[in-house]
Length: 291
Image 1 (cartoon, one colour):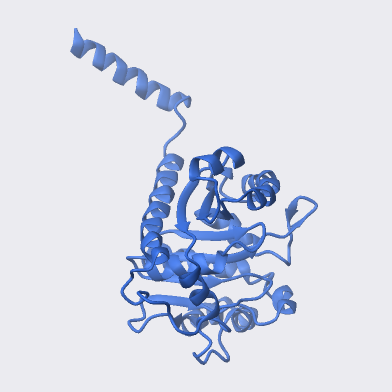
Image 2: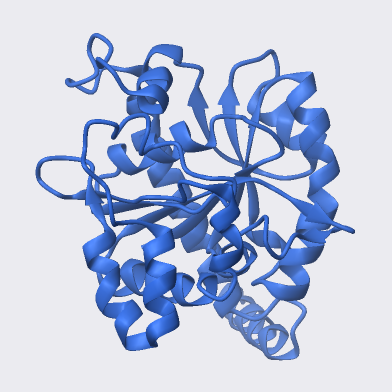
């Protein structure tokens, strides 16, 4: 399946979106809360669930012991988001000052997340929080850069408002350059649109010169519950909330976009000599058949 990283220029609902996608997926899914500024799910949606002793910071300690200890530790740090255990959550940091301890942990975690996606058929969503740049590059401590570099897709989460687009616009060029230089390519970048403003998907795509790969509605009741916890809104359990209904569609759109990208990367470009030769032979065969 797919490893998708969600980022934003400013608070645009990354965590609520990540939770919605994780909970709505038709497949086994995982939300990895990897925002170096600290996680919010522990004190919000999962506030009534005991989570002492689990999470990113404790995994970092295991990674410093040995790669084997890290691999063995990961399953014990995944907390169920549902009774069946099909939706899981890796708790984030409780203190932003802990971020420096994760610098050497990100590559190992990225490898594990991709194994879960490839071998265990997980949909993996990474809550990478707000992008932090330093001289035009991803900050080595205040961002989980290795996770972004290796993700199948990096979705910049924006609202359909002028303010949100203005903030996001300045991140496009450096983020594309980073993905080109250190990741799998600038084409990994897409937009997750939160439809909370006057701009529609095609307008957002034109404004940012980045494709909108999926969209979620502005559903304040469900987003508030996912962010802050408390009592679920009416209709939540029956999957009647607009956010969860559209999130299910969004998970399929994201998976389809990742699959298209995999296919495109496996085949050479049309102007590649090998591909050009194949196209010439196909054209010749077509001409012969017409004759």
